[in-house]
Image (cartoon, rainbow, N blue to C red; front, top):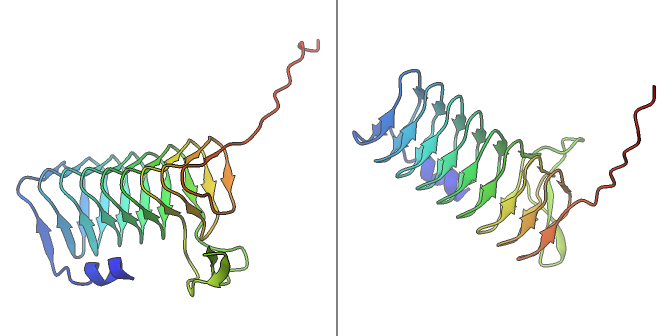
Length: 196
């Protein structure tokens, strides 16, 4: 709500002359792009949106109704929709939907935030041991500072990952992860000689 209130104050397009915007970038609506930001060919920004100092928006990335903090990277073909990314957040080829990623979060390649329940009902979340109705029909991930999310991870609606926690590759995160906790999937690999 705070992010949307701030975005609603943007009127027009305010693009720093020190931002580097390649040919083939589409910018629509009310947008602020700060000095040193770099937007690569094929990127699309749909306002209201804010892109901070020295942020990078990669080729074919899409940013909609979001705030991207200073020094953050919205990597190649990444979609960020209705989300807040703090400073120094890194993403690549993934979806960040209706989410909050605090400073220094790494959201690795092909990660996805599920933001809608199968029954399309309100998203619930645990707060201080109590399950509460967030009042939102869409809510993705809330990740604390310096959380590291490995490749191909999927997070369920309304899940929280604590500060400095690590999520191993291919994990489905369906419940909250406390601060400084490592989560991974145990995998059994079997090999046999080829049958002729």
